[in-house]
Image (cartoon, rainbow over all chains, first blue to last red; front, side):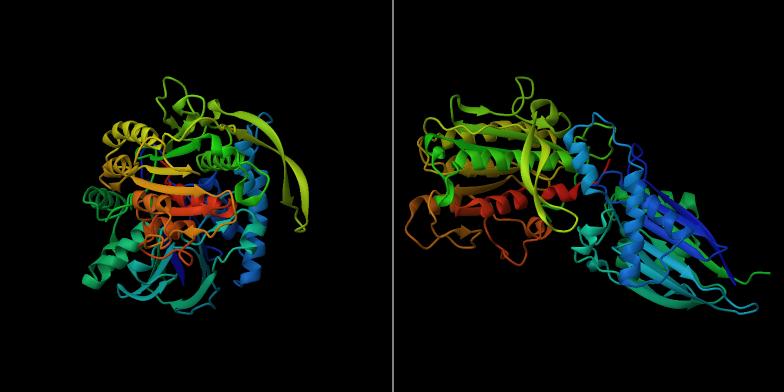
Length: 247
Length: 281
């Protein structure tokens, strides 16, 4: 068993690169998606740092303490990479000291024995970046949010500063599931996830669409939804992982 | 739905501070020995600095223009006058230009170290306002000037979150009943809602505080009733974004009476909670 992975999406503004970041390593069964908080300094770099670190070396266990320690180490790496100019004004130093923030959705697929026709996966989430596990184009698990009204304007976020997280009420969520051939894992950042969950009660076509959409078609659809005000004008990223029997 | 708009460079937000600089601001706040004018200028400087931090996205770039910010002083040596900016800025300054109107100072502050122990540390910060107390309390003229300033802004930013006016005073208007000027200011708006006018009254004594009430204060103080009537209802979205949903009830007015330092800080936090709505772009 293995996965085919596709990443697609677009930035909310042509003038500004997306602050979403995705990474995967199929050989080691690791997939991650993060949404950098726009208000913070260097959030695109922090989102990228989180997903790359997760794929290179995820937390040894998906427990609260282990993930917090893992994120604190990643935060130290981000801080060290800042290169603040010597003549930087005080607000730049204070913005750097406050650090950055991003959501995290990480998935680890357990190695399957040869010939197995299903695999187990485990997922960890902080914030409103979502995973939808599909079988026959129907949702069998929505994680960590399962309805459009659960999205707010202040999602939980992973900070670059470890002590800040220690003192916050940020909630770490975990889940696990299994995948067989043809099953699909859809990872998406908040705007698209909220739209999909809002559409789902009116019929299952939204999951069929997201299971099959190609990059150009997704771009056109997102632009049309933005124009009609049906989708929040935010960065959009869809990571689609389709389970398949490997040779 | 109003008061929902997110903030980016194409749809900036706007904060306007109306600051009482009349003679009575020399009195100490809440029974302490610190003049109200000093507490007010330091708190406003802290808020402007916090806005600047929110607009800093890259260590090598200028802050971004996510907000237009103004401070109007009334009383003081110039009657009613903008305190930040220059002749060109007409009273509202883009957040990207805020540093050019400030001076850098070094202050000593208590701060927790990594072991949680408090130590006196020096830190550099920025100052836009100095404490001033002089003259009377021309509140009506200040509200009219705010309306004049924001009239142009709302027509140029129809898609933006509406301006938030944070008015801090310790006294009673000396140029008439301010309710009409306040109502006219609140009538301005963008497609996302009307201008929000929040009022805070600073106390010189340890008197009972009226904290974001839902109904007019019951005691007979005419000034407190008047400021309540002048105040906009707080959108719950702002209250939640500032993290005050447990302390402040739905329907509360943006109004505090007999405030001491903690209430002033709460007022500023709630009034500038739209900094959490920034979306890059």
